[in-house]
Length: 187
Image 1 (cartoon, rainbow, N blue to C red):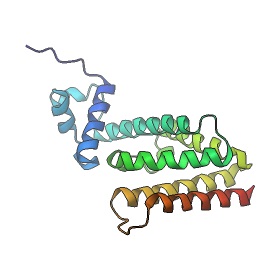
Image 2 (cartoon, rainbow, N blue to C red):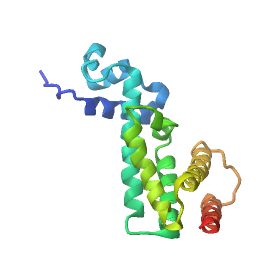
Image 3 (cartoon, rainbow, N blue to C red):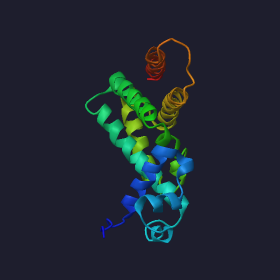
């Protein structure tokens, strides 16, 4: 008889992410995670309290993944180069993992489980913008604008919403340059 690997919270979250990648957030159920991990559903309750907590842990893992990727993209860069790298890395993440991105919490800062991971992700964006002298509310507004630009474009792109022949990279480059001009105008 084959020995089942020991179930951990990390392995439960990994199974949940695999389900999200395959079926979207709608496919994430405790029964599906249990089937994927080869256990009965009640065995999952040793690792997660319920589906809501599992979704929260998935969100934490996604934000950690994005934080790592974005940090790597901007490492050693500053100013326009850093912001450009961040925006292209963000878009790439969304288009490479559209189902994962759809599982990302929209406002993790108000969820105790997700708050720390959300703050780390936001700090990468704020740190990238520091070279423009933005502080306080101005930095938050600039971060929101960045998020809206990337989220909007990449979400439409990953859902097939841009059907005209003009190059998507060209359009995105125009948006990045527009945002950079806006930042330069504020500093």
